[in-house]
Length: 180
Ligand code: AMP
Image (cartoon, rainbow, N blue to C red; front, side, top):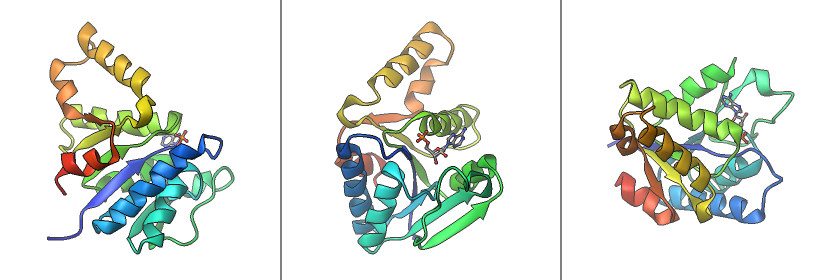
């Protein structure tokens, strides 16, 4: 069986409490230990950088997909196993999607939410059936999860939409849910 690839969507900001970077690093170490490939946006900062650095440090494999158009705003990581430079943000998201067997949503900002909702709505539209896991670390995503529940309860999304994503609060549960 070929090595599984996990796509992690997460924040690029460094201006967050250190615990968010630390939990990212712990997950990176865990991924390397399970021989899982990290697929992510290819940046070197924030939770993104913390996870990628930890996977690399512990001998794992990382594929970054970084858009040329972002070069004056974010920096691409210089020492990944593989970096794929694409033209646009849309190509980046497609590149991450195609290379991944599952998607994990770590704490992040608007970019992370954009990526999460795109992958969720693609699943609703039956464009894929890959697992989506929201890592609700220390309840960071509680307001988002409440909003998603409200959308479903009000009828703006079908009840089965709630079955298209998992919410976990512990790092270990991520790989338990995936059974990878
Ligand atoms: P953030 O969660 O805002 O820190 O962003 C996380 C990552 O998502 C960063 O690499 C951003 O460049 C990226 N990002 C921001 N906006 C978008 C968007 N509209 N579509 C895709 N990715 C985005």
